[in-house]
Image (tube, helix red, strand yellow):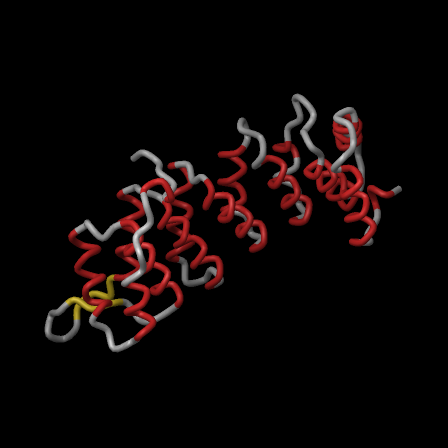
Length: 229
C-alpha cells in the first residue's frame, strides 16, 4: 500500500500526483483514517490529505493532534492549521508540543497570524533559556509582528539588562535573541518611550551588530500583523 510506504521518494511522488486528484479522494482518505491503522500509515495519509486541493467536508484533524507519535502530530497540525474552526486550538497545541519541529511549525504559522490567546505562549518560548536559540529567535520575530502591549513588554524584557554599578541602564548580554528583539523594537516600537531609550543605548554600542539591529528600518503598519489587546 502506497499509504504505508516508508520511502520518502515514493511518498513525495504520490503526493505530487494526488495534489491534482479529484475532490472525491478526500472522503476516501478520511474514511481510511477513521480505522485502526499503524501510525506510519496515519502519518502518510495525513500528508497526502494535506496536499489535496481541498479537505473533505466535515473532516476534523483534532482527532490526531494528540497522537503519541510526533510525526503523526506534526502532519495533523499542518492540516488543522488550514481549518478555520481548528486553527487557533491547533496553533496553541503546536506551540506547546514537546517536538521542536512541531513548535517551529506553530511559530511559522503564528508569523502569518497570531491570535491573542497564543501570545503568552510565544512570549514564554522567547524567554525560555531551555528552548533552542533558533526557536527563540523565531518567537521574537512573531512578537515583533504583533502590535500589542503584551508583545512590547516581552520584547523590552528581552533587551533590558538592568543597571550597571553606576545605576545606569544597560542592555542584556549580546546574543542572537538580543539582536532579534532590538530589530523588532526598531521596526515597530520606535515611538514608545521605553523602547526608544533602549534603542538609543544600542545605537551607541561598540558592537556593530547591536548598532545595526537597533537601526533597522521600521515597517509600515500594513506589513505588521495586528491583533487587539
